[in-house]
Image (cartoon, rainbow, N blue to C red; front, top):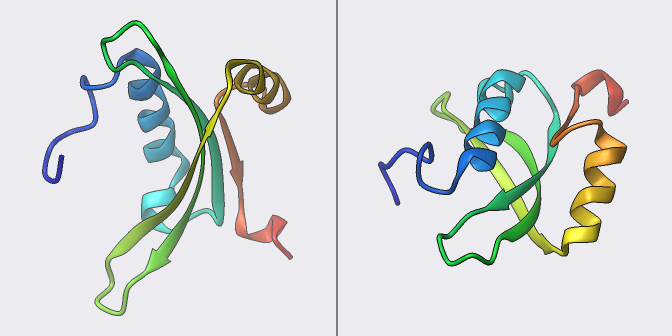
Length: 98
């Protein structure tokens, strides 16, 4: 999918999560970490539940990349984490890492 937009390809939940990533500042290097839960709709009627941990990496040329760890989770874990986070994304600022 290199060069493609994520929006519109994996369902409305993924679109919302992507929007939250962009708003969090993860791609600008403004936050230390985001933990996100997501439901991918692959069009086969069997949703895929994921938990991702993303942190910014500042490259020597000034670009900022998001380093991502993805873990498949089950539906009960998805709902438990959503309840604990109060939504689908938990944003951890740099000053909370101290």
